[in-house]
Length: 86
Image (tube, rainbow, N blue to C red; front, side, top):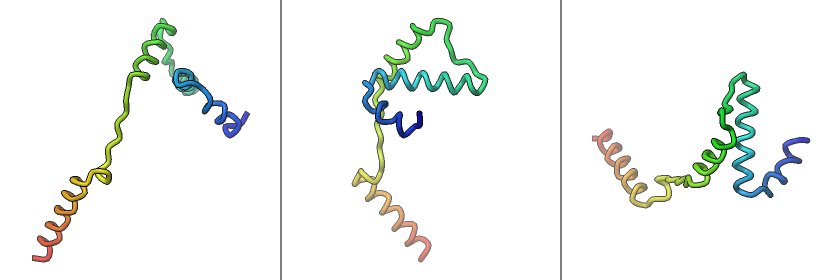
């Protein structure tokens, strides 16, 4: 099965199942590289990992979305330009 055939099915998975898939793929790739990431108590640690991932919230910040940051950067650039022209 190709990746393009698999992706629509992956998109239909629940959040929890997507996390399980990530975990499965991470372990599979590690095994292929000759590493073992398998814990001794796999099931218990899988639940801990899934709970940690489920409770994690990613925050993405960009100065482009913050008008104060854009203005501060603009002021710095203008000051630098004036300093080189002086």
